[in-house]
Image (cartoon, rainbow, N blue to C red; front, side, top):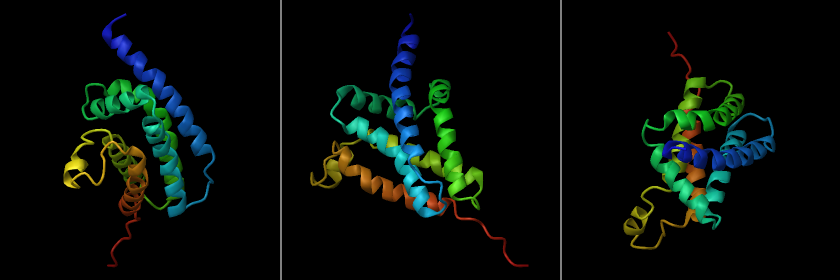
Length: 168
């Protein structure tokens, strides 16, 4: 086949396994509402990706770097939509159920911010080495998971705060 077909096959094979891990993790999250539910749902989305990428399998590490690169432009958007949107919609729906007073648009926007932050953990990872004079290693993805999730959860909850109309 073509290079594009090979590229799509590479993306599809790994994303299928990742989507399965994410859906299994989401199925273990209780259907409660509120900040704790949001934290559990976001963790179910982020942790499988970062755990696979940081798990020592060079194929997953390379895949995560590839996703970080291609998700920054619209060139491969149809490919990403075809293989990622169904699972993303499951998470968006769960997040909206957890925050029923938030607008769905805010939930989608905050979810995309979280996804962008997640994939950016693999782009420019050496930058943190220089900024911390080597006290934090950019390649320490496992060390990045907890602070990245904390940051993402706080931002998600802030973006999705219900807007109360001003009194007349």
